[in-house]
Length: 135
Image: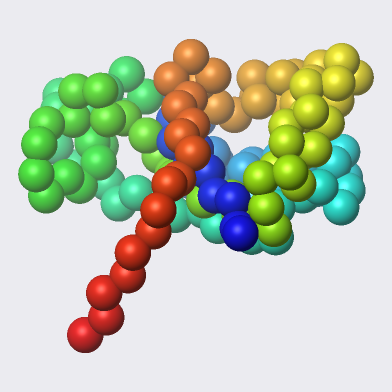
């Protein structure tokens, strides 16, 4: 059975949204693929959140460009992207998880993450049951 996680990521405050996206897509993802090889997820989908111009309403990295929220307030939701990672099964995920915490790999990933994301705000969650309703 497929095993999926969501990772919510906020960019480093010193980067623009486009700089963040460029780094994530063109540096971080290729590095991750190189470091974990065949343990890389079957799918690594990234969805970047829309932003709006509204002075003083965003979080630390996006004070004047908060997420374009349809409901709720931006406090506690200053993420730039949600990544959906899916593996063949839970066992393969655990192999990936173990691989990224090997000291040499973990050090390379930590150094890379310091360049573009706010690690203190990063959140990840395991997806349980998925249901789908179509038109």
